[in-house]
Each structure stands twice: as C-alpha cells, then as structure tokens.
Length: 432
Image 1 (spheres, rainbow, N blue to C red):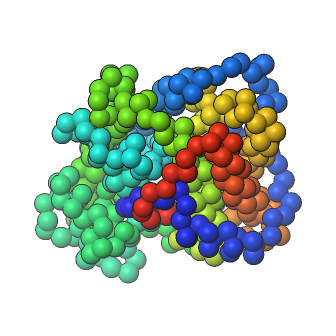
Image 2: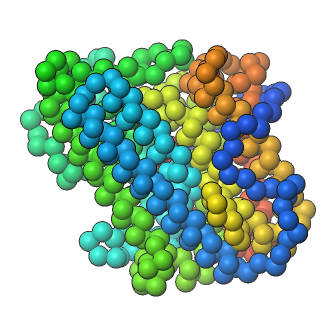
Image 3: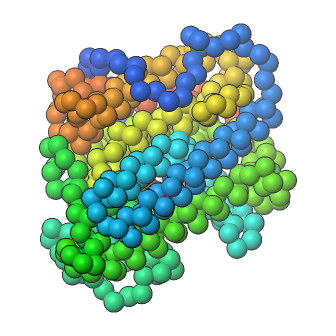
C-alpha cells in the first residue's frame, strides 16, 4: 500500500542474505518469450535522441495500460456472466480472463514508482495524485484474505459476513485498516481470492478450489453468496475505473495537458533518470527480492505473489518483460528508441554486458514460465519454492534472481555512464 524507494535497507539486507543461496546449474530453455530485444539480432544501431527515448516510453506506457484496461473489461464481462450463471464452466472462464490480465498489467509495473514526476498530477476528478498509491489500490500484495471472506480458520469476521454496505468507497476505506498494509480489500489480488479462494496446498501442487456454488443463490455454499457476488461485482468495477484513469494519464491527449503523467514526463529533465531507476528497482528490489528471492530463501509459499491462483510464474515473467520493454524500447508490435540505445552510444561495453544479462535472465525466466504452463509434470512457482537447492528448477529460479540483482548493479552503472541523477523517494511496501 506504500511507495517504494529506489534504494531500500530491505534490499541491502536481501543482498547479504541472497549470498547464502548458491547459484547453480540453471539449465536454460528459451521457450515462452513474448517480447524481445537483444544485440544478437538487432539491426545496425542508429543515432537516437533523449527525446525519442522519452516519447517512446510514453507510447509504451499508454499501450501497456490500455491493454490492461481492455483485459480488465474482458474480465468484468466474464465475471458478470459467471455471477448471472454461477457454474464451474463460467468460473473457469473468469479465471482465464484473470490470467490474461496479468500479462499486460505486470509489464506496466516497471512504471509504478513515485518521484516528483509522478506525484500530484491533476487531471480533474479522475486525476492520479500518486502512482504508488494508485498501484496500491490496484495490485497491493500481500493480502490478508481473512479481511474479505471466510478462511479455514475464520468464517465470520470478514467484510462479506458483515452487514456493511459493499460499495467502492467502503472497500477502498478498508485498505490498510488498522495500519496493516496486508489489509487489502480492492484490486487484482482481491479478485483473485474471490475466484480461487485459499490455497491450502503449501508447496504441493494445487491452487485454491473455491466452488462456483459460493456464488449460487439456489445452492449457496459457505453462506453469504449474494454479498460475495456483490463484492466481486463492485471490486471488479473499481479495477476498471482505476485502469481507465491511468490510461487517460498517458493518452496522446494527456501529453498536451499540463499536470498529467505523460505531460510531466515529456517535460521533465529527470525522465531518463526515472526510466533507468525504475528498471533497477523493478529488477533487484522488487522482482529479485520481494517476489522471488525471499520465497526461495525462506521456502515459504506465503511469499508467493499470486498465491491463490498459483500464477506467480506468469506474473514474474512479465514483470521482467516490463524491464526489457523499457531498456529496448519495445512493447508488442511497437519498437522504438529505448534507454539501451542511448547507453550503447555512450558505453558500448556496458550495453553489451547488460544485453547479455537480459538474454541470460530471459532464458531462465522462460524456463520458469514453461515449467508452470506445461501440461505434463507442471511445476508452479510455489512448488519450486519447496524443492530446495540442488533441484534444477529451484536452482534455475535462484540463478535468475541473482542475475536480476546483478542487472540492478549494472543499471546503476548505466545511470552513472549517462550522468543521470540517482532518484530516491521515501516509502516502503516491498512486494506490492
């Protein structure tokens, strides 16, 4: 629920702890990639301007958030169909739509930290005053599921079992209740919990198994089915509202509108520093540490980011794609000037070092994605957590995590090579 610093004490502690885990023989499998960009297949480099990089970054931001909004609207339609006819087939369709949303949204997360570029934008009633606060409402994690609905341990002390009117304003007011960041009532993970329910399998195979009858008025299981359905409708509508507001902040019209994120970005002399700083903190503080390293180090499936659905392999893979997008200036069919182009002109050797790291990490992250998606002998990230050192999949994931830490260090050198300011803002909230 809180913002992130580009340099945090928690991350520095993690670097020390991560060295305990031995990076071993990660076997590389390059299947499953969705976006690319590396020197091995690049055409002859062309001169690039800082403005071209910044303009292209704004284009990528608008595309990634627009795709996220479109996916959220598809999810909303699937959930509406499910709630109208709550059967297992329609629940499966809603889960499929949830998974599809994770692909573009996770790629947008590289843009989610606050600096003076992103704070206090003001485009009217739908304006966003803080990207980090907005992101907390959309994708905060970890989530204490007992705030929302029944759990194995408690079936009565939650929002759905209460008599409070379920509205967007009420749900938003419950975020951070009692100064606990894990009290999260809105956003993607709240929807995930309402679709899957608790995952009680630990590090064994299997996600949450909430029955469709939890939403049935004819054969209601676990009580409060009408209120549960109301909660799911409202929280999904709020997600669509939030993404609509963010798309407006990065639209072509917003570029010309004073106070929007896009306008702030194209007119700030700190935009390039924001790009490289965001890549760095996404690589090491967030992805390597909060979303992978801590879980691998502790063996605790509670550290899994998409813990109800067991879709963490999808989430973390596309978080890495977001870093690549920012470095290479690519997103889906879009291919423009990227930060890496500027770096290559300034320091060819450092560019090649980072490019090779990107290739290595892509291979290892692709293996995590493929292992989680394959039909036979599927191994999801929470299972990898429990495998331990010496297992091929665990060592591959651990090696990817350590490579991401190295990538963060190299991106810091890239910032220095371009004589860019090191941005540092207050805040915490690892794992949001």
